[in-house]
Amino acid sequence: MKTVCSLQKMRDLSREVRRSGRTLGFVPTMGALHEGHLSLVRQSVAACDFTVVSIFVNPAQFGENEDLAVYPEDLENDRQKLLSAGADILFLPAAADIYPPGFKTHVSVSGITGQLCGKSRPGFFRGVTTVVLKLFHLVEPDTAFFGEKDRQQLEVVKTLVRDLNLDVTIASGPIVREADGLAMSSRNRYLSATERASALCLSQALSAARKRVDAGEGSADNLRREMRGIIEMEKFAEVDYISVCDPRSFEELEEVGREALIALAVKIGGTRLIDNCIVGRK
Image (cartoon, rainbow, N blue to C red; front, side, top):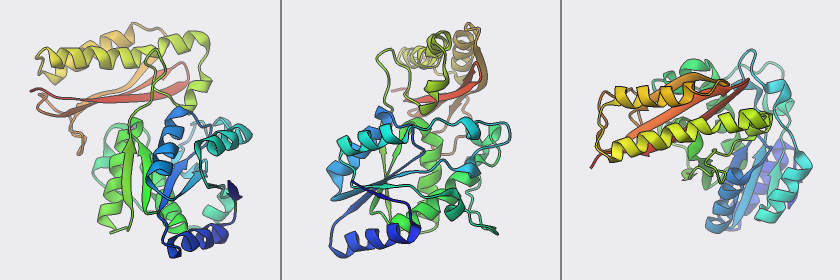
């Protein structure tokens, strides 16, 4: 596995791969890799001839008083994990190269970024779409892989690709969970043992809502109310949002139809976690 830091070197290598007729897969990450990331890497390795994984903690998607300064880093461990997963290139661009002095250009997706995480984290999705577009231009992948835990982000990236006619296919991978149901996240490292136990309220709330829908419950308000009750039983938990919404527009629903997204953002102590699931009535 090669490590590449230069933007031009990354561009040259990706074009060399494309000229040779090989397909190129790309997994963008912010590092502190866990099994969720690695499942996407293995998906790329299985589907494509050549796999690039980037690690870049993107300052543009962090708001004031968020955790940019302390975001977890474990580069040597990440290297070993990527080597074992079969990645061909680890791309490590510097922030000063991605955002050079005088940088003035941003790209944003309207509408769907005003809901859920976009509502509680202003500017977050503009940072995501700007850096994703830059990385796509540098890596020039045939297919890029994103996780479904960040389902709103996945839909925003799909919209970016469609609206700007980008020549890349967006593939997704399912949420990977710990044995007790907690969705894997780099931010789980922040949790104390007690907070870690409290964090299970997210997956427990989703499971309860799914069971209610499977039993015939159609009222979105009833589902929100039940999930809030489960989460607020935990003293370390503070609800950011509880949503029962359309899985593409992210507009809140009154009734669950054939398909609905249930999405949660909850602070456990000082750590903001997200989780979601798709439900539907037959």
